[in-house]
Length: 175
Image (cartoon, rainbow, N blue to C red; front, side, top):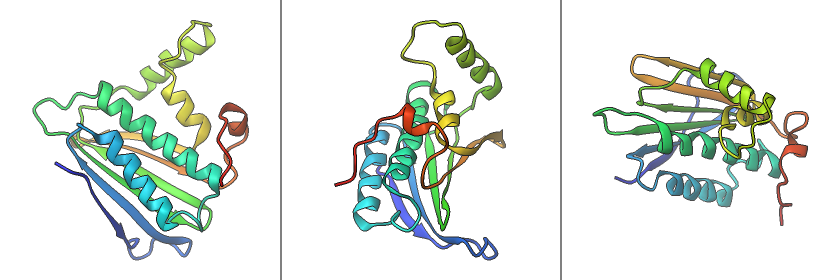
C-alpha cells in the first residue's frame, strides 16, 4: 500500500515559532525507504524547509530519518501487525522538530546504546552497529519512548548542525 503525505497545521497553542507540519504515513515496509526519499525530494522541490533549515540541516534531517526507517525495515519486529510508520516534521523558525512513530515491538534503547558504545570504545572494526550514536551526534534533544503498542523517536534539527557534525559527515554543497 502506498505512503500518504500531507501538510498539517500545528495544534492550537503549539507556540509562536511553529509554522506547519509535514507528515508522511507509510503502510508496510516494502519500498518504505524509497517512499521516504521520494517524499523528501518533493518537499525540497516545494521549498518546504527553506525557512527552517539550511542545506546542511536538510541533509542531516534526511539522513536521521533514513537511518531510523532503514533500521525498522532491517531489524524491527511487528509480530502479526501490519507495519505502520508515521512521520511528522514540524517546521519552526529555529529548525525542525521530527517525530517518527511506529507499531513495532520496539527495543531496549539503553541496552542497544551501550552495545554501540562498546563497539566504538572497544575499537572493534565494524561499519555497522553505530546508528544510535550517529543519531545522537547529528540531532538535538533525541528521545525514544515506548508504550501502548507504539514506539516514538523524537529529535530536533537546527540550521548550522550540532557541534562537530560537519566534521563527521561530508555533505555536497547546494547547487
